Image 1 (cartoon, rainbow, N blue to C red):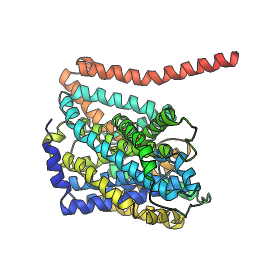
Image 2: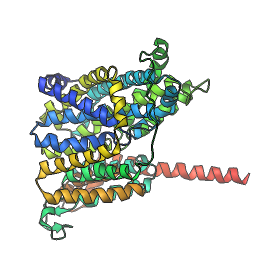
Image 3: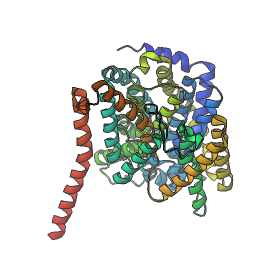
Length: 502
């Protein structure tokens, strides 16, 4: 296996500029992750336009965004352990045993142990990414326009069954994203689509405007709506040194959970919330012989933390090799590459090895930086939880406006961002997840281009979408992924009816 791209990547990641960028991203990401419900997508959405307007090269921008992503996965554990309020969806399972440990006066130990588990998961995930990205890229070179279109269909089928608690709302979100992707001038026919005679929309909805509106603005509105709901911060951290017996006890669980997290992360549309739930339930089934899970068991804390960080690395595999984001956060990063007119896919590793290699190498470096930051500075990060909403919300709004205006220099874009944010707030109140909308928006443009190219090659004959073995396999997988959850749900309902009748 040719690992030359990785050595070239270390040359990129270890330059002084990129080391400082990575360190800043790790610090910002941890802060963002520590704030309840903010999450990595909001941090990346706010920093992306600023990084782009600063003229950073694409590899430096990707290193910054990857550092924020991984840092947020580290930081999410802080509010879960100290507040029993997950920093993001992936940290929900962390609170099950982390918060009881904090209530027992072992908050410091819980924070240290979760940091070590996060480090183990991040390193295993980075190793998996370095090994499997070239393999998948080599297999994907045989993809043509038809295969890429079917791959997008498979990605949407996967999203419908795995993202969010309501598959119907997830698919509606994907359709909304697809519709937003069609706004603007049609390059083939020259027709204006859904612009409503507004010249500013002739180039379509800008990615940065959509992301900041859907995530940051809607989040600020939700924070204002719920500002009356107070929580109590556990301020006494206790001893920070974790017992060696606890490390030994949780090592096997952390390694197994990291492997689970990486595999789940590679699947499009899954994310840390799915992997942490699988890792936790697996650990409980294997290790909870004394009924201590949920009461402060160190294995119940290590399992979701290791899987979360491995999932973050695994999500980069389909993004870099297939151009299919593995999560909502990598969908935003995919859009960041497109801002630089770089198309992710199997040829990215060959044409721009410094981007892929630099990002992979930065994950190795970033995990060490995060460990060095999180262990001694955890007291400082914990104080971030006391930031009042009257300061947090205006800060989000100011950064959002500066980010959009610095990228597009358009007042219309600011109003469009605010309007999208208001609609996003209404959708979130109705129980919709924002990630499927972004995934639909990003994949929709690629999907349309490849469908048109495939039909142009075949002279308009749609059978080209079923001709190759790759296409037929992907169609089969898409049907299986879409139908299997329905079959399971039907069987569960029948079982419940039978039990009720008895």
